[in-house]
Image (cartoon, rainbow, N blue to C red; front, side, top):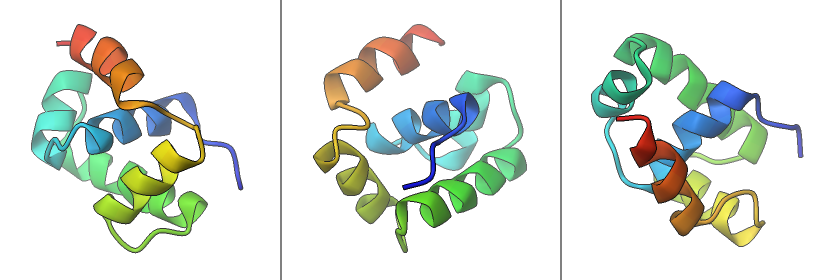
Length: 77
């Protein structure tokens, strides 16, 4: 699996927590269009067709945990 960039990882945290692209963008200080670009790259790197598959793949493979995502991502607010 291709390694995620720091920003892709941050966006993935938002996806795992169930946030929409606009909300992820708001929290990270980027546009929803930029979030979409990161989401597409995450899907490609995780070989996922949608957000649920990407989130499940990330958690199952140990890339991320929901507890860590909450701690890191929600701290950015």
